[in-house]
Length: 362
Ligand code: IPM
Ligand code: MG
Image (cartoon, rainbow, N blue to C red; front, side, top):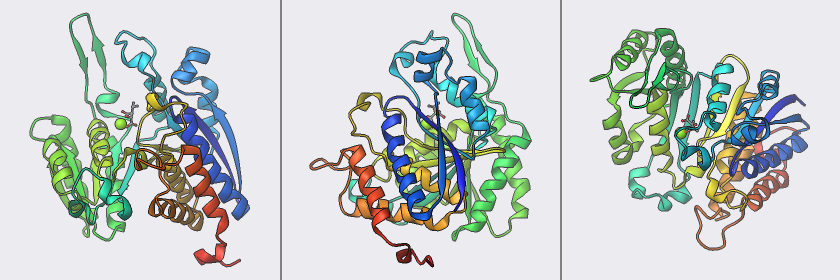
């Protein structure tokens, strides 16, 4: 029995619906394993702007600082996207929470469910063996460099300090060392950008400390092409903030729906767990979004809480639903489940199995 305090940030658009399903799954796990999860719900993004004028109110920061983990839905609202002059934006809340909590490493695993391979826009044979994880730097680079804007000119500086690159590369090297294929690919634009040449320098200096890891380098434009032509070549990818943002959306298409990809962000304090996809405002309130990415983000959370069996149960329950065509409308045209129905199915499956089925002694 363990006690964990979780801050819940539902955010905007489909955020509340998908987070509700992930909390349902957490409740099933806590019931079955006699853990206590406490939830403190706070505002972030457009809903926080509407309520307080601030995309990241102080209470939200305070709650995150005092929690063991943070579960986030999504942020974003088209009314800000279409107004280039808006002074306050929902995204500022997300960027600020990442920076304030020092969440420098965003970890995005990409695995393919075999029974969904036929739904991918790529040929099934191209998808065989795809199993990669993207380590995206999350608190530096062009996202956070100095910005300037006049009426007719604008600039965003891509700045990295060596230590910012070293700390994420260290995590990525360790992950590569742990995985069976032991491959690490740095994605950059070192043929053009000085900041990318610094990334190469860091990786080249570090690689002797990890002699079993096979290191390769790809320019981002080539990597974008390779991701479609031959995605199974990738094992661990490490890259800067902006390149990681783009290449992970591209990678998310491989599995048939962006609604399947989870992420965790690690730093010095509590970790934050969120799906890779956005707030999908067109679907908000319709109960049709795919909750799997958020539920798999909870699976990553439980693994970090060192609840291995519990995390395995989530994978098993999600795989069971996927294999039995219990899917939302992004993956199934007819007889699709609602978001809340899929959440029910996954939690029910967890509760219906005895712990013994997972090799846990009871
Ligand atoms: C992501 C999102 C965010 C990002 C946006 C919403 C600011 O696209 O988490 O990938 O660019 O980091
Ligand atoms: Mg993104």
